[in-house]
Length: 169
Image (tube, rainbow, N blue to C red; front, side):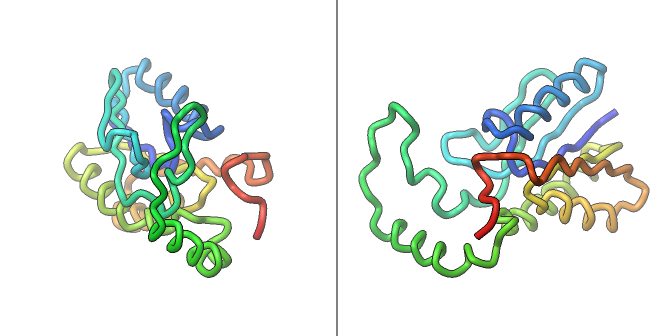
């Protein structure tokens, strides 16, 4: 069977959901399923990659502010004053209302790409993962378009400690 997984974060990102679902996808692939994973685009990570029967497609725009801080061991990048200014505006305005889902702008990209994959690859089952909840909203819209497509929503534990997601504003 051909399976579609929608997750804002996925391997090689190191979030609890990304690690857990990478292992689940590997197990599904070992059982003979073909897996497509839709995830958000991130700096330094290819837009498309594949290992075995798992194909990862990254879509959308890189979130504003991602990649501003260097990873440990990397030299600091030359400061981009315009980007830093835009991030400050974002933090003072939009960031106050987007919580708990900062990935809302990924929705339209995920939806369009998922619809294309479902049609072209004849996807037989869809999984959506949260946190954040944008994946489930995309799944809901996709399910309305394809009512016969089985959909499984993994809500995870929204109260678990994740370093990436702030608990509140």
